[in-house]
Length: 119
Image (cartoon, rainbow, N blue to C red; front, side, top):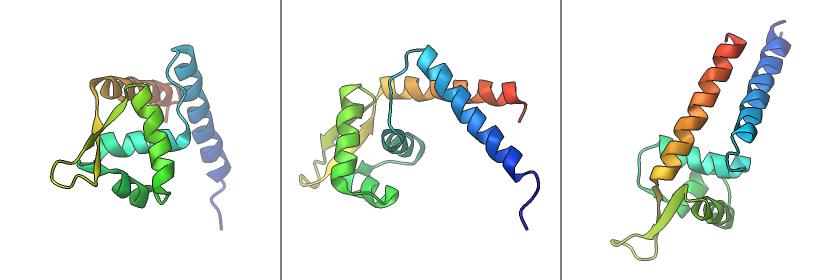
């Protein structure tokens, strides 16, 4: 049987997401899709190396979907691609300073939101 507190936990989690998103909008942060954010968080929070093929497998999406996400992240300077010198068929996905700053600020927004909601 479901815990009676589950709806409240769900509502609180959704409110946290809403407040985090609103604060990102207020700060004029780049608009990232859920897929772009998933790629970015995977690249920044898991040990490298990261390849298009590996990210596609890890996120269970197609390589073209990863490529489209990386096109946008690269355009924003949040990630970059580089040919793997040991296997020129493979593309490595690398972190950038701008991407690190973006995620640090995003993490601060999440932390502040959690404190606001007293979770």
